Image (cartoon, each protein chain N blue to C red):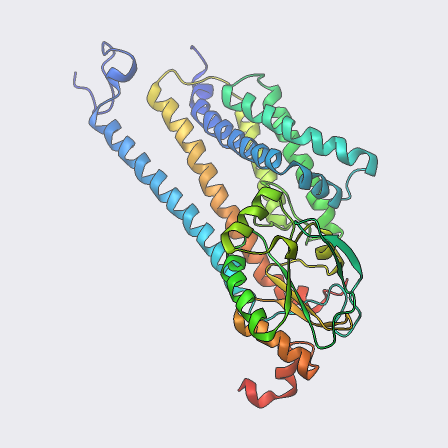
Length: 218
Length: 190
């Protein structure tokens, strides 16, 4: 009696020896294809997630949580990584402004934005204070990578919690009286500039500025 | 093994299910052990346990998941590993369901403790219920098939299902964010 392909005769050796019929080779091939496909689907899904994270914030987006624009900043005594103490929300020299930038080693946009922020701060004569909340080694890597100053880098959750920062990179601009001049989620140099515009024009955000001048939107 | 034919037919399915669920638990435990401190906050956020029990629960859940995952993958402690796994899944589903009924959609599920925050949804509740039901099938058989090909089929099917579940997880964590985004922005004064 003939045997069907894939069905081993009963006298065949047990184990892998009887497994390698054409049918099973096809099955193994199919499995390889299925595994490759599912890995590809996973990679695609992750990529969609990354794209979503990058695309979702469309402007220097102002969230309503935390102290609002025009309100005095909460006064916070914090220590920078170099050990010096810094008072956030204190009075500054007249005409000065302090830019708080909330960053993380794990956020790709932050890494793109840190050099932009430093250049922007230089041209606008702003003091910058970088704020992170992660392990020390991680922050040191960030500092080394971008040549940041340790005395202008605060590692700890206090400031982020006081401003209710929920997305990174986030920026807060404080004026010389310690009042919040502008704040929001920042993704580009244009967003930083929108903070300065907000400070100078008194519009809380680029959104409210656009709302007040509808012809610009068109 | 001289199992009943019906049980023998279930064996590869049971193996696949056990592999799938054990991978779910092992990866979840790994994520939670890596971010153990934030996990306590996530447990507290559920407002499911009295405050005094939050810290012990947060300390207990990752090792429990690790044990369940290991026992399932090694076929140990049958049927207790399966029952514990189903109980944990249903407990998590209950905690999520209660918070969804309270309207607390925005809290982090903490399921795999990945960098991407995954908010609660009924999809996640259903995922847990379906996994628990699948474990019911695994209760019928703890036989590891003798035939290496059948065994390989079982393991691979479980592993591939796990990868697909992870992919779905990524997609599920994105779509609600899109749908809720305008609402959340408008009502963020909370």
